[in-house]
Length: 157
Image (cartoon, rainbow, N blue to C red; front, side, top):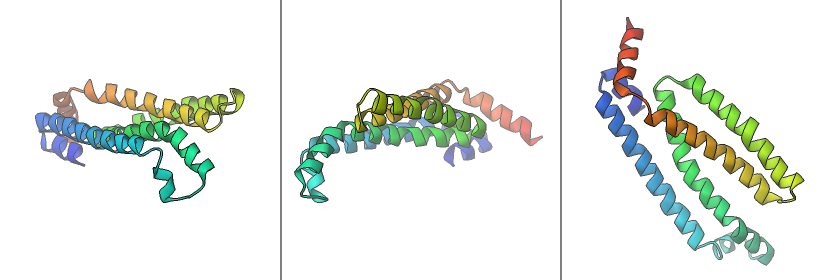
């Protein structure tokens, strides 16, 4: 919302600043949470179960959860920035490509064909999300915010 408001108000520098601040804030918070999950990986499951098998599985999969937390902290922010710029179609195509062409097939191949099980499925989905995050990072940080303001002004006429 802030991005679209700043663009609409004709403030490219404020737009750029808010994009940087929200991305860094989200990254910092998600990294802190991921570190907490990793540091508690051997005990966190005991809050939900007393089963040793489940606890061992949670401990083994915790690095995947930590990576998901970091990517899940940044990727939605980048999607929100892109949508705030009016790039809904771009975001939709990136989502479709990264999840359905990269993430799910890679997860199925690694999980079932390569016998990696849950680790393989999670790796595939993380791969799709990582590619999506990188594409959105590239699109966001190569954006000329002054040009975006000018484009918006042209659409108003």
